[in-house]
Length: 319
Image 1: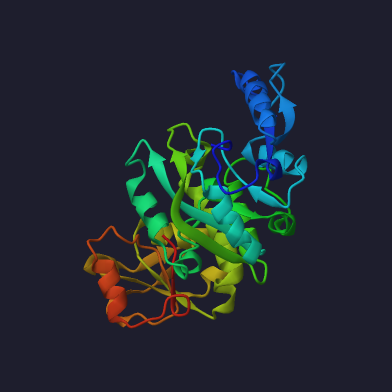
Image 2: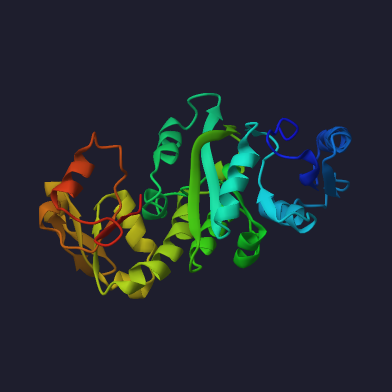
């Protein structure tokens, strides 16, 4: 799909590949495609190599991306996983946006193969408005990694990918948003075919690891500015959210809210502390909503709307 790119000079492209101790036919495939790319005037940088000893351990996807970026020379970085495919106009369209927005992670719409894979998530990510890219940043990464394109200074400002195992895209995403002036922009056109595989690294992280990775930036950017707050949802997700809070922020939780009469009557008990659970109609902002959207046949959304609250000020979604 690199060779198929349109409206851009091939000689301005560079493909940087890092072989992270592969054990299959990756080395041969790299050699084959390097010849084809160079024949079309595209420069190629290759690093790493196959696994030669059982004692060698792959660095992981974060380390591999860092090595690939470090050995490259271009000003703009376009990420493409080996099993994904980009549409012919991807680079031209995203480059045009990145030139105007040098502090932005530029993403795009995408589709899954097989079609219908992760249907709920795909629909959510592809229909977010420009404002919701920020407002729903603590639910999930609002611009998925396989569609990322940005100025190299975005990478340098973040300090590259975390090389710890797992969730390095989420860590990068939130470190980016820690910086003043950081932008998120998504071209709505489906520019990437994002292949679904059950062995993908993104599926190997536990719910608790994902929760911790999201809650730390939420604490430092939002919760630390609130004197107190309420958690909407006295079920599993609300309980888990509370348990992962820092001690200081646990003390700022003044209530939970819910619609279940049994949970309201029982209250929330933790480490000798009893926190009241109130009906949602009596809740007072600010609020952290720990109930998934799109899973209650519209009841959650209607309840929130009835309170006439402003997202990003009176409440944030975190589920």
